Length: 434
Image 1 (spheres, rainbow, N blue to C red):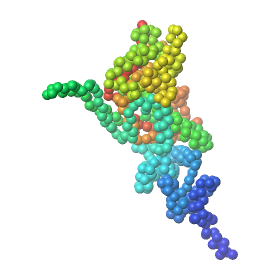
Image 2: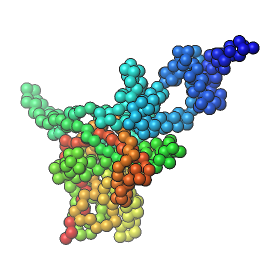
Image 3: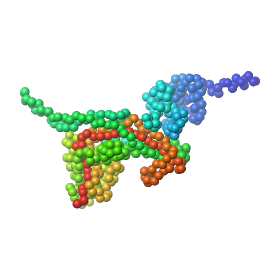
Image 4: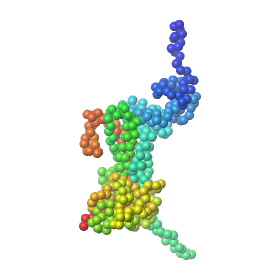
């Protein structure tokens, strides 16, 4: 009997063939613990189930399958685990390895990490920040695209390291000459030049409670993604429009900058009744186009940009006879979005809102985005904070992470933008006080 018991203790409870069948059966309802034990059993026999899953192949029927919700939860849990253990390389590497093996950083990073045997340094940037998994970064970028004006307007170059020179040109675009036999062909000089872009850092801190981190990892990550996306999109819009060339904007000169020579269209023709952005008229929106270079007036490439509250002005403003003033000009929604006379209209909160007297204030622009270039750095990196004091952006009050038992995520991104043809835009400004 003793020999029989000893033999049974050495035999696996589930043999290799049964384990393969269970893992390959999509209809099997197993807990994560059981699934991990089955994976471990096969890995002891030289089968890397994570690698098989990532490559979407199933040697020996050993591929592990998860539904979308489970994958999302695992990714969120491991991402937060990687961030909060950034100061402990051994634990951080465990989280990084699971994310990389799961394909959450993309195939290139996976292959690089496996080749070097290093599943940690491949996801850390030069400042020691943790690069977010590809899925998280993509989600943030997509959310930022939905709320950011700059991204929709400009010509963007992504994943740039160091400085990039972008070719651009300005000058006369004249018609070809009619030339008689033996006659002289004239030329119109085109000024070829470059825009130099060097992505610089912008950052945001997003705090949350320790209790929430323990209980709601996927929800926290989703909320943090939205907060980071809105923050970065707002920074890009602010730089595009209000950048003044100082260190406050990483030396970016925006459309409203005094260092640029963007034409200005003053509404109201000097009247003291045009000190509110809401005083703009349909005729002024159209006539402002004459201030732009004729070669830049391509309707498909031009954009009006205003504060979101201007949409209600376009929808509800009436003339002296009670007729809607913009009814024949403004079109809301549809496949082409908001439009004014075939030109797209975009909205951003970084501009002045209508509804109050604002003499000599730039409150909007009409721009051809083809002449604006933006370069972004390699991904979004993060760093977890547990101590120190950060400022609440909404109230201005201090948040003490240690005494309030909070966690915070510091996110970093790099971008730069510039434009080489000032006459490819025109800014709208309220009239001065008379």
